[in-house]
Length: 191
Image (tube, rainbow, N blue to C red; front, side):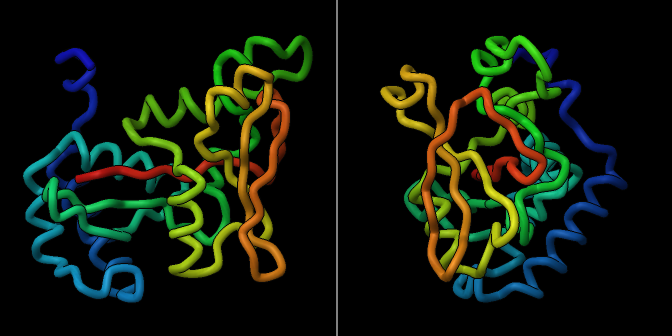
């Protein structure tokens, strides 16, 4: 990322305070997600990193409801996932990646998961992360979410997505160029 890109990825002081307050409320209302983490430590990290705040705001703006789900002690980073009950509304009806988007001849979606995540400076959840999220609650009971896909599957034109039905996480495949009104993606961010 160039310095020019970084210059556009800042919030006003008022936006920062509003976002931090919203994140604090969500944190306090969902302690099961982060039982051994103190909000004051998270807040300190957030206030020290305006670019990460911008990414969290993008997660929030697109309906992801980001929340702390873990702490990486070795790297001293708090890990946020999109914790909205269903796949984030502002990130649905998209195919998997740019190659898939460009391969569509008709009825192209407006965007793709990989490019959207990159523009927000976040990463799609892996299958493992998606399963860990489901240990914290029931998510995607009516929707589904694209997840990171192994290159050998992607080379053959496929991509993976997950959802939660019948008390279980299901991992499926689809053509990477497919898109549905109920499928988006969930992201992760380290702060």
